[in-house]
Each structure stands twice: as structure tokens, then as C-alpha cells.
Length: 336
Image (cartoon, rainbow, N blue to C red; front, side, top):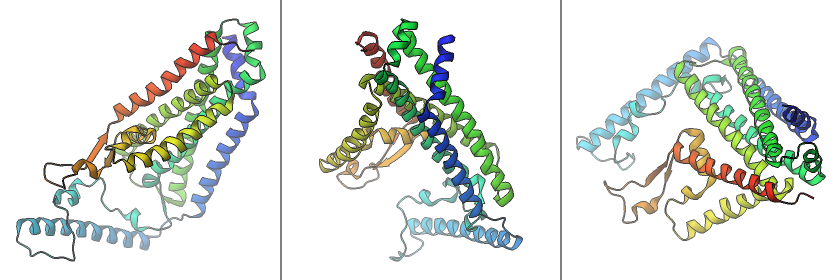
């Protein structure tokens, strides 16, 4: 317990951590202030006009679907000026994820129900970066300065010391992420109530938002552990930063381009960014025209999916494997 308390004090005293917290608060404040300044409470006339436009848009969707069905049944002559999909269910209003609502026709009005999830993605992205950088600098600075060696003189158990550092890091990042999430969403909820629209905040909305938030917290913890592990293996904070930059340039950009040149199928399966997106969204669907190389047909589908389960497995294997390697190397390596 004394070791964890000491590590918590060391982590909170680091200037880089304090700087990142300040940047986090500033980013939230700028986002909230910008949203508040660009929104207003809609008047009754604006609401009536938006409701009328939303109703008309829904009628247009239904009319397009009926026209598609009539074209498919041969009861309507072909019209070269209009395009309809081969499967009319693709434009069936009942099958759409969402239908036009009045908030879609209220420019300059913030709707919490419509904007909460995109704002939450922004928060998760910042917290992922925060966790990765703090995790890397936390252990990297101690390894470079010799702080770990001094700590081992007091507690000469390498695995215990490293586990205490990792546990303290993950616990601190989790608490900070939870507090930031509550403050962040509560701020924009108040903006929606006072200078915009709250929207439809039913059970489905909160369940969906909670699911994204939970998956985001898992991603934040994995990123923190990943930064910690890479910096431990490289014995320096810059090792984690270099590994991140090298992966982004060499693989996400370079390898993706090579896979496109060689006409590799399902190339998104090999990209970590695809699995991150699939995990956050509960699955992802990608298009690859190479899957139907002989031309489109009823028995060929050019789309393929990545499930959230397989994406989570990839992320766990990556973070867990590097963390296990970091512990194994730290246990045997000369630290002086």
C-alpha cells in the first residue's frame, strides 16, 4: 500500500502530467465556449418550420421507396434521370438508422441528443492520447533518470515495483477519465437545456451513449498500458513516441498504399485503426470492390464486416503481449 501511495504521489507531481491535465481542461473549455457561442434557443416559428421540413423529408423518402418498388415491378417506366439501387430495401425508411428530425433543419442550434456521441468520440480521442503519453513519460522518465533504481533499493522486487507503477497509472487514468466524462457531458447537457435543444433523451439514447463510453474507457486503458509497455521496452519515453510515429507512417500510410497497389483483399483487416473504429462503434462495415472481381451479382457482396469481438481480441493481444514482454525484459535487464 505504501508503494502505491508513493507511486501515486510521483505520478501526480510530474509536470508533464499536470500540463496534460491543463490542456485537457483548456480543450474542454474551448469546445464548450465555441458551442455556446454558436448556438441559440430556437423560437416557436423556427420549430414549426423545422417540423414541417422534417415531415416533408420523410414523405420524400417514402415516395422514393415506393417509386423504386414500382420501377422494380415494371409498373413504372425507366427514368434515366433518377438512380435507384438494385435492392429497394436500401432506401426503405423503416430500415434506416434514423429518419429526418426537426433538429436537422435548425442550423445554428445545438442539439444534445444529436451531438453528444460525436462530442464523446472527441473526448475519447483526447483521453487515448493523454493515456498513451502519460503512460510512456511516467515510466520512461524514471528509467532515464535512474528513479527506478533508487526505488528498487527500497523495494527490491522488480515485478512488484513495475506492477505497482502500471496499476497506479491505469487507476489514475481511469478515475480522471470518469471525472472528465461526467463533467464534459454534463456541461453540454446544460448547454442543450439553456442555449439549444435537449433532443430525445430516451432509454435507447443513454444505452447507446453508455456503450460508446464504456468501450472508450477500455480503449483509453489499453492505450495507457501500450505507452507504458513500449517505453519500458525502449527504456525511454521517446521509444513510445517513435514507435507510434513509425507505425502511423510505415504501416497505416505506407503499407496501406502497397496493399492497394497489389490489389490485396480486405486490406482494412490489417490496420489497427480499423479495429479501433470497429471496437468503438460496436462493429464496422467496409467496402472492397475486389471481392466481386468478376462483376457485381446477386450472389456477391462487396461489403465485409469487422466485429467488435474480433477487434477487442486484436487490441488485447497487442497491448497484453507488449505488456508481458515489458515485464519479462524488466525482470532480467540491467537497469544501470
